[in-house]
Each structure stands twice: as structure tokens, then as C-alpha cells.
Image 1 (tube, one colour):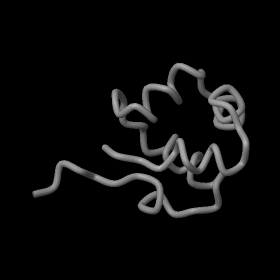
Image 2 (image 1 turned 90 degrees about the vertical axis):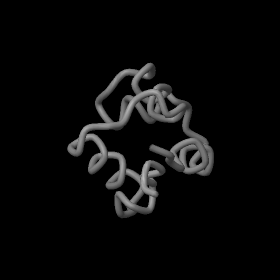
Image 3 (image 1 turned 180 degrees about the horizontal axis):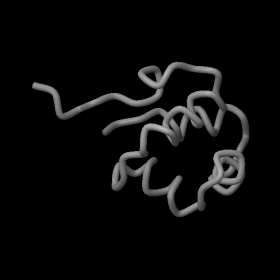
Length: 66
């Protein structure tokens, strides 16, 4: 799943560790999501969307659709 987390995080001058702390996960989890190695759970996707004051679909793009 593609996402805009890196750009959104950079726009707020947050490190991966900053975002992880705000979202209640590890920095490694944020890195894995940003690099597409891990898709977030629905509760985590909602937390991230709330942090950026966006809808989930404005952050995450399902690239597996044909």
C-alpha cells in the first residue's frame, strides 16, 4: 500500500521517532509503513489520519487495485 507519510511527516518537521511517539508505536513500525513493508492496522491508520487531520484515504492508497 502506498502512502504519503514521509511527505506529511516532513511537512511538520517530525522525525520517524516523533511520529512513532505520537502514534504510540515504534520508530521501526513507522519506517516499515513508509517503505511499504507493512500495512497499518485500521486503528493505527485512524490514529495517523487524526494526527495529520486527514481522512485515511488521503494518506493511504491501495495500489493493489487493477
